[in-house]
Each structure stands twice: as C-alpha cells, then as structure tokens.
Length: 124
Image (cartoon, rainbow, N blue to C red; front, side, top):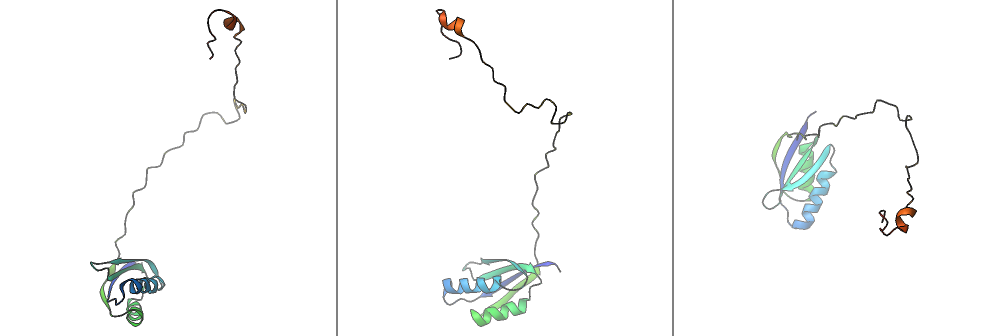
C-alpha cells in the first residue's frame, strides 16, 4: 500500500479541548504516521500514514468531537532529503603497529649555560 494523505475538517466547539481530543483520536488510529492541524482556524486535521481507514476515522471524530467532513484523500508527497556526500577514508600504507609509540615524545633542554650568562633564559 502507498502512503496516503487525508485531510478532515472538524467543527470544534471548545477550541483547545477539542483540538487535543481530535489529535489524540487521529494519532491512535491504525496506520497513522503523523498528524497535524492546518487551516485558517486550525480546524483541519492532516493525517499521513499507510492503510488508514478514512471512513472509520471520520466516524470516530464525529462521535467524539463534533461534525467532521472528509476534504481530500490522496497519495502523500514523499520528501527527498539530500544526503551529504560520503567522505572517503584514507588509510596509510603501513599497518598501525609500525612506528607506534604509546608515549608522547618529551624533550628536555639544559639551559644552565644560558641562565648563568647575562642573557635571559630562552625557554621562558
């Protein structure tokens, strides 16, 4: 089955409470992937999913919320997301155990000759 988009207009008496109830009913229906409110007065419910029983959904909304009319039923437009191009991994020619030193290189300089002279120490 293909993914379909269903738009249902619901007349809501108590706006906030009815919207919440309608969204809950639509979201718990079988096959629903997403639910959104649209329209000027936010009185249209857009349901996207696969295998949605639109008539049963409209009946449930009429029974629980108020007057519900099916506006449109059709295939949903699939959004194509562009993926970032894959970055190739570049491996060295030698395995990791060649030239492997687990400890960092630490060098110490003896500046006794320089500190005893009139010039200041160059390390600081």
